[in-house]
Image (cartoon, rainbow, N blue to C red; front, side, top):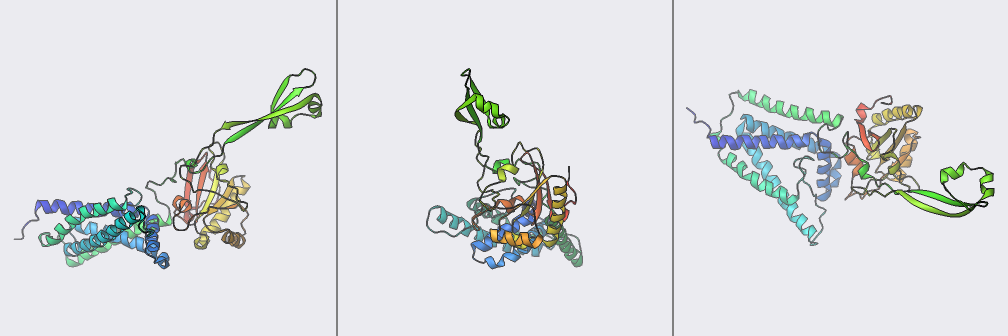
Length: 391
């Protein structure tokens, strides 16, 4: 009669399995975001040519983590699961060790590597420094080794060989299907600063608002007359005949508000920033903003849907604009290609260091965000674009 699994080993196995499932879930709710992290790794290790594979690599990594977690938790092909855990944790143990060392050398000015600052182990749900990530892996590799060296004490569940392999396939299918749904639409859980209901006006610097007061003196009475620019425009010629200009005062009626994080601009060809206009907290009407992080990668069908919605916005007197990180030359070609008549603004960034606020704001390329009074009212991936203006 086979011995039962020791209770202490069962506890370690269950906790380790749940950890992997939780870790995979935090990334699966935003696989595009983890794909961005994978691409950051490619750039950091000077293999940026793998950029087209970043999202695929992210999906596969998340799937493997979820499958291993389910296998260990439910005792499906435990021997394979134990080996998978060992390989998985060993790889990330040495990777995070290097990241921690490289970041230390960068911070202390020893050498610059362009190291990734957040490994993305728990997506955007839990942000960790490289040092904290390495220490976390030191703690997690211990139970991994315990499970590996005691793997023969853990019996497989009561399923046939075929049944167990079918379970492995089922775990993989569940993970991939879940991720594909999120990729085709948008993350519905997460910590994004740009999610529905968030006040995003904090990312846009609001210039100080001034009021100009013109001072005139009545020629007959000597009485001082103070008028704003709007009031002055309503005066007829007799006012200027009976009053003499004395001076003007510039009054600040609203102080300048600095952005929470610098880097979000909507610049036109002349370099003027229009972001404060569209993200103003006192702007009553909706603004539809088309986010196209990279014009060269924008989905054709998505742009066709965007053009239909842009026309509907124009007919209803609703602002429709676009923003991209692509260059002005690319914008000109893009506008010509689609016959775009709405404004397309440019958000300049450092291609390596960012901040990548357009990409972070919208996981779909293209995607649309509706802003009202500086708050995100609605967001859609291109597959979900409405054809008419939503009130």
